[in-house]
Length: 97
Image (cartoon, rainbow, N blue to C red; front, side, top):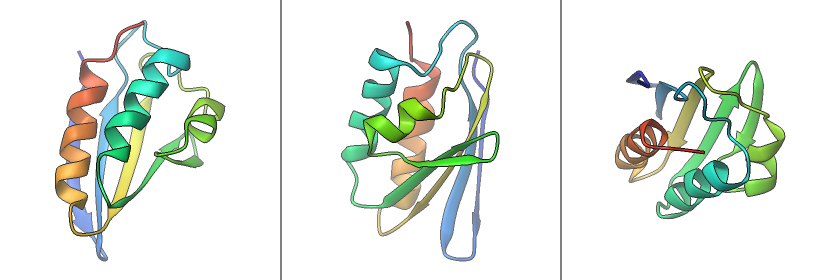
């Protein structure tokens, strides 16, 4: 099962969530993740192993090459940042191949 945590720092809200084992962030799961991010006005970034991407860009999320069991670091800034990260954490925990 995916794990999640969050905190607020310097005007940005951050969260960590682990991709479920056996679920890589490739075409369908990445598209589901990006669709969820696009539902918010906040600027959202996702980072994996030191590489960062715009969470609303399918191509940059795919380029991260995140594999099952990888920890995603989410950062959001904007009026709905907290809600955005909560929704994305929930979405990641339900991703499937």
